Length: 162
Image (tube, rainbow, N blue to C red):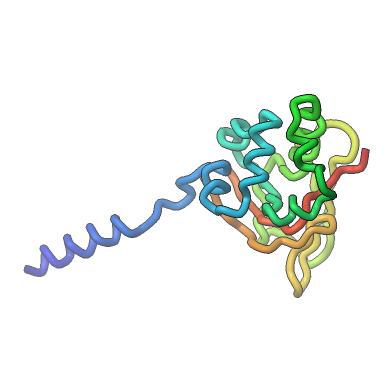
């Protein structure tokens, strides 16, 4: 009887325990339900596969609300095929080529290099008592761990200087 109780407990735990880091960045973003514009933009820019299969990435992921704060027509314009390279530059400005969790941040401002090629490639990340900011965006949900990196959800789309 004792053995069957233990077996049942182990079986129940395995059914309800989610495997750590099971989803890649794209899957996790899709499950979040608030990052749909980011996913559509990543697909339009040809970056979705890189986010799904790349390793050791950190993504500062703007919410759908963050994209909605951009001037009217901006998102629609960026999603057009002729603006693919501009969209890719903006999105790659939100990605680091390494994992960076919030517990690795000192209580001061640091600069981190993004995967964006050319131009402005540095983000200012600051951890304080009130939270973490990336450039002028606030991290609203930190440290979503995935099989290939970390997602930090932010409340603003960051635009690199030209």
